[in-house]
Figure (tube, rainbow, N blue to C red):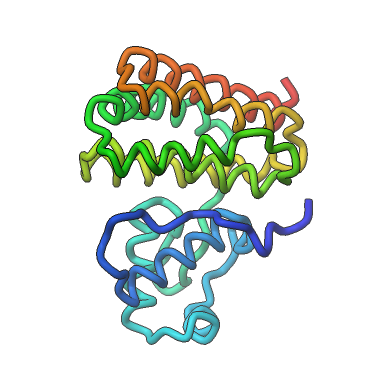
Length: 229
């Protein structure tokens, strides 16, 4: 499979936050390289090369790598160096168990707490879903990410938002292994309309159930593609 370079919109910075620090920017950009498979599982992390590419000094780069290690995307071995962690397809089931609970609760909270500004953002996303049949796999995943991040943000619980972001990133990295083979991806992503409408309309029960169903069905689709079962 071709390396996923030039990914459109992957790993958007969370909205409504202060301008990122250099360490934040380094974290975001290195994480994008890892998740999009530009930095492949098992690859050696060349700190000096990253500094040159990002135009960022050693301290913020090391802070970013430290955070990525805490998130399970980088492994550090004394006297050997740093490496991109391997991808374990079997983790999909565990991630789905956690995400189906937390994301469905976030959807319920979003339906209950969404502000006028949140609802405007939801309307924009609904407009993007309307009649879109021209998106490639990576553009579809970028749209999926924007939708989920808007739900997280609309729940107005920063701790829940940061936790969900971390789990989403781990799942997204596995999904990128299957993007070129996932023929059902368009239907799965464009099927978010019911979820967004439920949150916009303040229907917490429907939002919760729709999100739970989406997470489980999407993970099942990716599992079939990756395992052939």
